[in-house]
Image 1 (cartoon, helix red, strand yellow):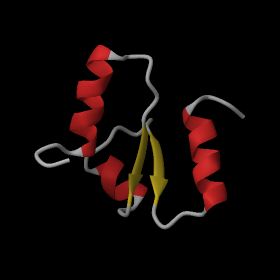
Image 2: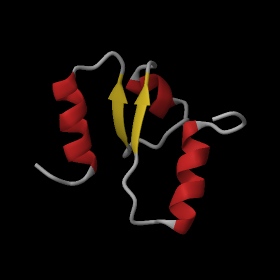
Image 3: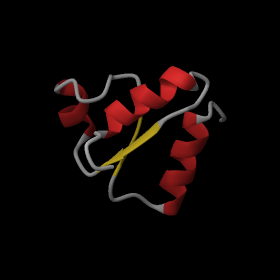
Image 4: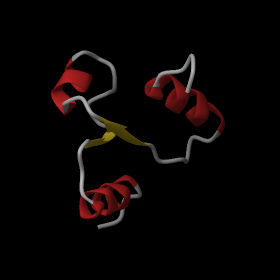
Amino acid sequence: MPGWSGPELARHFLTSRPEVRILYISGYTGKMLTGRGVVPDDVNLLIKPFTSQGLATAVRDALGEK
């Protein structure tokens, strides 16, 4: 995403499609991202490395499924 950060892309996308669910994936720790205001505290965030089961769970959580 040259020229765009993940949060910038998400904000831009949500402007036209507010119903879309966003799942952030990062190699940084959650506290580093949320504590510095990079992403809000209430986002769906998956930290690398993750397993296929972890990804599946994160996607279900992001979609509001249990």
